[in-house]
Length: 163
Image 1 (cartoon, rainbow, N blue to C red):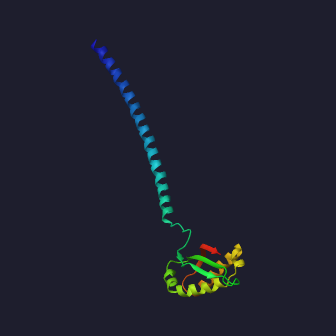
Image 2 (image 1 turned 90 degrees about the horizontal axis):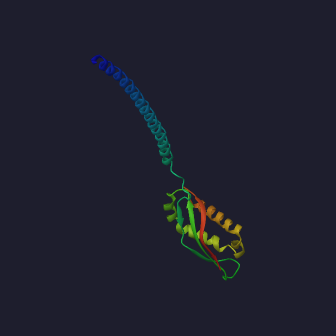
Image 3 (image 1 turned 60 degrees about the vertical axis):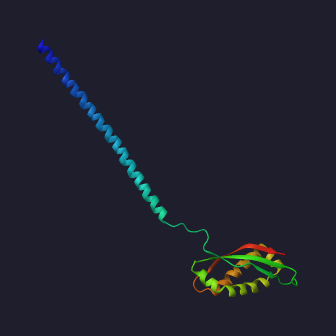
């Protein structure tokens, strides 16, 4: 009987070794699959983060450049013996913020020149849309003739009242 029990134990031992080897192989394959998934995820997410960093380094272009405001103008219009007047508030878009200091120095000259321009306008000229655009263009031309470093890009009318 001792021999039969020894044979039964020997048969059981190899069966346990075979099943434990299979279990170890399955665990190793599962670890490789999970590890590959993690490595792939980190690879793709890591590259996406680098492109996001590159995109954020580029400064977004501003929609509007630096603005400089003028005090309101109230002038009599031409051809009406002083019966009609214009109240206008102007903001200027500049090419460079460094020009603002020059604009402050030239402010009296700028206001005088714009007063001459505005008092020469008639009611009919200012009430048509093309007339307002021509006024903007004339202001840009006159002011850019004073500047040496930068330039006025656009003129914005923030108030425009004709009465």
